[in-house]
Image (cartoon, rainbow, N blue to C red; front, side, top):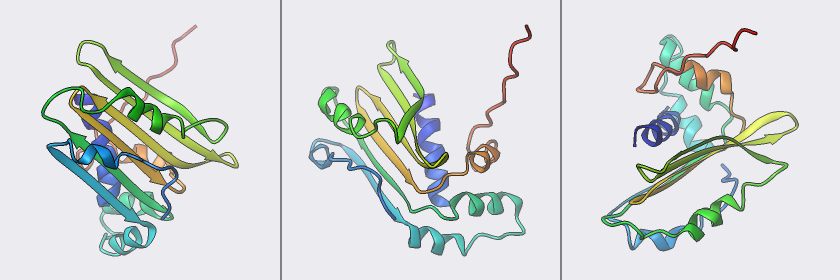
Length: 176
């Protein structure tokens, strides 16, 4: 479950450091779950938290830059004791809201052996990234993250190696 946890950790770091862009419609899973996370940080809450970050600390300054202008960060995560507590219809209910031209899937991960999937979607408005959605599932877990508002992907990439966010190395294009 490492790729899924890495995606969730990246979203959580942004949160620790407005307007939800789609409906989760997953409240019915809470009663079945052994553990739930329901995080809703609107824009004013994020800006309040940013006041406590030190601009002189390079790492904190990066987080502050990343969350500037965000409308909100919303996370719903469910852990279950047994498989089969969430259905493919739950997954499709979220995916069906993430459609072109606004949303495009940029990363998809599937492990048949582990029974895990992860997807990252971007919302584009006027040639700018204006939201990120992450969906991560396994047989016993279901997580959806929505980062609403302008997302500076360069700032997000700069956090790699800090705050527990994995450092992603750029792979040079193959030589021809």
